[in-house]
Structure formats: structure tokens, C-alpha cells
Length: 123
Image (cartoon, rainbow, N blue to C red; front, side, top):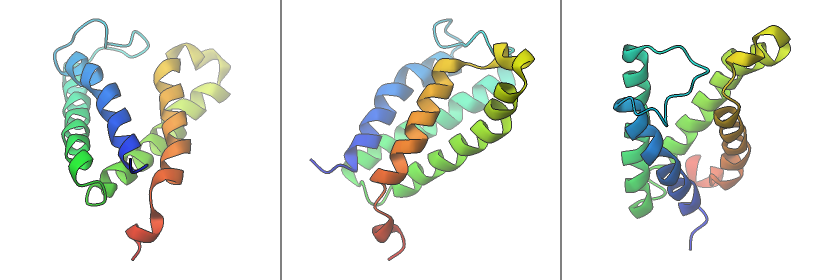
């Protein structure tokens, strides 16, 4: 099995419940750390649905869909820098952090750059 398939498989496993829960406001996927906003929730759900669909396609065309993995690295890094890190530093706001999601973001942010075949990207 090509190691590049692993991120797509992990995306699919994570994003099926997250996407359904976010788009359809199912209680098990709505994180209590974030204030409810139907508009932002559905935008996030639609984005995650797009990543899910592209990850399924990535199982069949892994090299073609590498930009999906790169986009995830960028948006996870930005979220961690703009939302997570300031709240970790400001101890009084740590209650606003979804620690499970943050942990998943950190793990994927560490792993994906080692799996992405950068030579193929820049050739």
C-alpha cells in the first residue's frame, strides 16, 4: 500500500462523523467549547464535506489530490496559530479550546508534511 493513501483514509474516517454532525447539527459532533452559529457551522461543515469528497477521490488518484493535504496543513496551522495558541498563552481562555480537535490538528500537522511527497509536488 502506498503510504500516501494513509492521510486520505484517516481524513475519511475522521470527516464522516464530523461532516454529518456539523452540517446537520447532530449533538455528538457539536463541540460545547464553541458558540453555536448556524452560518459558521454549515460553512465549516461544507468545507469538511469538500475535504471528505476530495479524500475519497484521493484514494483513487493520490498524487493528483496532494493539494488537498497541503490545504489541510495550511488551514490547521493557521487555526492553531490564530485560535489555539493565544488561548493556551492566555490561561483564562483555555476553557474555549476544544482539546480533542486541537490534538487531532496538531497530530495531522506533524504527520502530513512527512507523508506528502514534496519532490512530486515541486517537480
